[in-house]
Structures are given as C-alpha cells and as structure tokens.
Length: 110
Image (cartoon, rainbow, N blue to C red):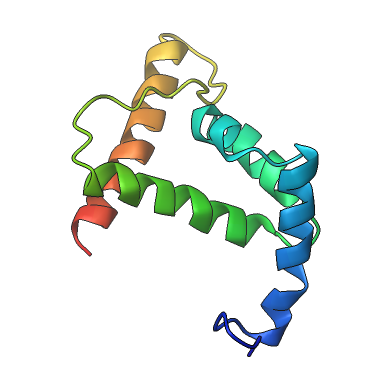
C-alpha cells in the first residue's frame, strides 16, 4: 500500500497522472459534472491508467451523490441511440430513459 493514503501499489501510478491532468486542465471535474456520459468517459480514459471500467464507476458514483444530496429533478439524456423506423426518436428516448432509471433504481437498492 502507498504509505499514508491507503492505496494499493497499482493505483500509485495513476495518482500522479490524474494530478498532472488536473493541473494542466486536461481533466476538469467541473466540466465532467456537466458532460454527457460518453464525453466524460472519453475525458477520463484519456488519462493514462484510467480505463473504461474506472470511468464507468466514476459516473455511477456521481449518480450516488445525486441521491445522497436529495436531487429530485430530471436527469436529461442528451444522447439517444440511433434507431430507425417509425417513431425512432421516441423509442430511442424511451431506451435512454429506461437506462438512466435502471441505474437510479440500482443505487436505491444498495
């Protein structure tokens, strides 16, 4: 474990990378908080040592914070899957809304 902060040795390599990315402005948590999931994931995974799994866990943790602070408003999906056919927009929105709802439900069951 890294002395004093309770992290495993493998995590030690990513901490300086994250710090450098924050200092340089390549990683900005305020910007991440307003970004669409795919954009936030891209920004996070651009940092050496942060992979897709870690980025997704960060996004799930953000949803937990919304729950903990009592956020009761809509989380608007700004990207929906491209679906062809009649009423494709409504179907895409319904899919995305269901996806967000499932994540919020999973957090509520913890």
